[in-house]
Image (spheres, rainbow, N blue to C red):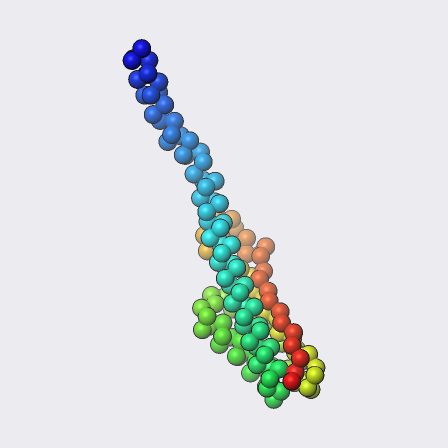
Length: 136
C-alpha cells in the first residue's frame, strides 16, 4: 500500500511544471495588459488635464494667440512627464468674449511591453482629449 502512494506522488511531480508552462503565457499577457491599460489611462488623464488648462488659459486671457496657448499646453505636458509628441488643435483663441474656445489633444499610445509582441498595435489606439470653454 505504501508503494502505490509513493508511485502516484512521483508520477505527479512533473505535472506542476507542465501546467505552469501551459498557463504562464496567458497569465503574463493578462498581467502586462493590465499594466499597459494603466499606463494608457494615466496618459489620457495627463492629456485631459492639459487640454483643460489650455482652454482655461485661453478663455481667461483674450489676447493670447494659438501659438502661445499651444506652448502653454506643451509645457504642462512636459512637466507632467508626457512621453509622446501630441497633436494639438486649438480653435477660437482670438475670439470675442462669450465665444467658444476649443482645445483638442491627440496622439497614438505607444505600448511599452505589448508593442514588442504585437507589431503595429500603435495604429489601433489613439488617445484624445477635448475641452470647450467660453471666453470671459
